[in-house]
Structures are given as structure tokens and as C-alpha cells.
Image (cartoon, rainbow, N blue to C red; front, side, top):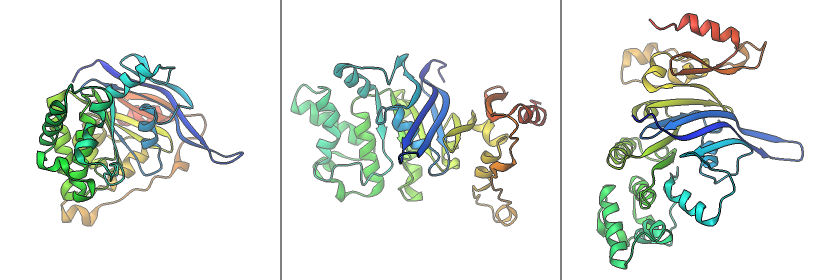
Amino acid sequence: MSKEKLLEVKNLKQHFRTGRHSVVKAVDGISFDIYEGETFGLVGESGCGKSTTGRTIIRLYNATDGEVKFQGEDVHGKKSAKDLKKFNRRMQMIFQDPYASLNPRMTVMDIIAEGIDIHGLADSQQARKKRVYDLLETVGLNKEHANRYPHEFSGGQRQRIGIARALAVDPSFIIADEPISALDVSIQAQVVNLMKKLQKENNLTYLFIAHDLSMVKYISDRIGVMYFGKIVELADSDELYANPMHPYTKSLLSAIPLPDPDYERNRVRTTYDPSQHDNSEEPEFREVRPGHWVLCTTKEFEHYKKEYAPV
């Protein structure tokens, strides 16, 4: 994995006003980096702010506060139409719902070619057609599918079309917002394996957003765990599974079923209780082990350091 930063997120906030005096802090001061060629998993329960984070990074929402830098450039800074177009080509998004994210009135050919047309990436109709056919083949479909409409495909096939659309403009970074949650379990692994294959072939970098921690571990190099707008823990995938520290992470891991009847019979599921935290001071993001960060107070930090000291 390259150690060159592709994306830097610093103290990002996304607050929504829901009434005259009411504000929802969907994202409340989070920071993380994503390195070129890696998959960074962002996981948490519904409503924790993970999808809002992805949409803010790609400028679907304007950030309330904080900074997002992509390849050293300020994402939310003032940009000309030309600069925005260039930015949109480098960063693409795969959406959660393959049913809602494809225009039902457009053929698959036109859906996939939309970005090609906008960015002028084909110098003729023949080149445009060939590019779409190649993309369909890349995602496991065939050229006969090009003239069909979205309603003629299964959920897994539609998500493949969504992936082809994202790849059409040769991006370097893709935000995958719950790309498998609307799919049957039998199809989820196929889509994730396709994404891993495409990453290797095209040197892609992913922000993979999901609520299923087991699937996130399978695809991610590093994982950030979100709870109510904040990242509470961040570590390498294997390290997070082997040494979960924050009680919320432990509760998520305890909910993962395993294909082992004896284990399942005796599995103890833990429930996260925020009131159990030390409230003597505002928690900070601290590095307990190399590369393993936890949102905690000084007292909790000392406890974690002692309990999880490297062997």
C-alpha cells in the first residue's frame, strides 16, 4: 500500500438545521486520511453520519466546518466550472440503492456513457459504444445489455451497471456508499469481489461505507468506526478485530454471527451504554497502539494503554 495521502479530512462537520432552534450534528468534527491504493472502511449503525460524511467529501453537501483535501486541493474551496468538472472526474460515487440511482428512462448505454459525454472522452459514436461495451465486460455483463433499461435487470446487475458508470471517467477515488446493503447476501460477495478485482486492475482508492462490520473487514485495509457523528475508533482491519477497545466497537463485533453452532449457542452479545464513559473531561482522539486510535479521556487512555500494551 502506498503511503501517499490521497484524501485528508480534518475536523469535518456537517450540521443540519431541522427547526428554528434545532440542529442535527450528523458529522461532528471527524478527522482521517486515506492513502493511495487502499480501501478505508467507514462503519456504524444507521444514522451515525457515515453516508453524510461520504456525500460531504464529494461535495453533494457543503461542509458546515472543517477541511477536505483531495490530492492536496481544498475540495470545498471556491472552484470554477472547469475545476469542478476536473474534480468530478477524479472522484466518483457508487450509491446504496441500485434501483433509485439509475434513470429508468435511459438505456444502459446512455447511463454509462453520460460521464463519457460530459467529459468528452470519446471522439466518435463508435469509440463511445466500444468504451461502454468494454465497461460492461469489465463488470461481468455483456454488450447485449447495452440497449436494455434498468428495470430489466436484477439488483446485483444494476449495481454492476452503477459501478461501470463510476468507472467510465477513469476516476482515482471512489466512494462506495453502502453498495451491497440492498442486495441479497448471495450477491453481496460477488459485488465486493468485483470491486477488489477492479481496484487491483485500475489502481483505485475506495472509501467503503457500510454497517456490516464483517464485510467491511473483508474489503478494507483500515476501518473507522462511527457513532453519532464521531469516529470513536480507527485501526488496521486485522488490529481492530483482534483488539477492539472502544465499547461501541465491541458491541458491533459481538453482533456478528459465525457459522458455528456451539459459538452461537454461547455467544454473549454486548450492548453499548454511553453513560459508562468517564465524563470528567471532553474525550480526544488518541493513539493507544501504533496506528490504533480511540476517542477517549485521559483516564480511559491510560486504561487502554495498560490493557492493550503491545506484547
